[in-house]
Amino acid sequence: MSYIEHVGKYFIMLKQVFRSPQKKAVFRDALFREVEDLGLKSVGIVAFIAFFVGGVVAIQTALNVDNPMIPKYLIGFATKRSMILEFAPTFASVILAGKVGSFITSSIGTMRVTEQIDALEVMGINSLNYLVLPKVIAAVFFYPLLVILAMFLGIFGGWAAGSLTELFHSVDYIAGIQLDFNPFLIRYALIKSVVFAFVIATVPSYHGYYVKGGALEVGRASTQAVVWTSVIVILLNYFLTQMLLG
Image (cartoon, rainbow, N blue to C red; front, top):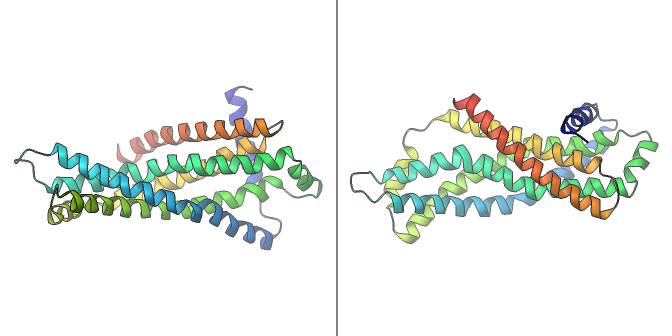
């Protein structure tokens, strides 16, 4: 199947996804379940990686800013900008593309190969709306919170790294954080996180929903979903950066 056909099937899938839910109570229960599976269970890995990425950025910046003419507060400034602009929204999204994307594809793909989706269709249920829409809403509304958490923990991780290694003083680091604060950069990161969350929820769902075969094909579909989701996130990151900051 050509790429154009896949793109067409993807947008046809989205048309079915965004139809009105048939039973509000069932949809609400599914939404809360997806918030837990896709969001709450991802807090740990995002927090862990963001904390240590912030520490690494601060240490590397401190080791390269060894000229006495360069002010030390640039370490905090560079760590803040790095975490807000790229590491928190983009790096976290790539991580979630691997963790959440494989989970979504494997769960929906297993339902497909075991004919559970066919059973839903026989009962007159819009299977795409029932399976995918709660994932989309959960990701779009919860992932910006994960990005904000990653920003905070990344900056805090940089401060903790400086305190442990004594490469720079806390006063200089905090001064760099407070230097030239631009609220639009936070909005920019959150806009990216919403777009990436939509991709992370829908692209793996597409690969899982249209998988054919057995368990082996589900595994291959999970791999393809992670790869394509990561590629799309990186491409969208480039275009969004150009449009919002260019």
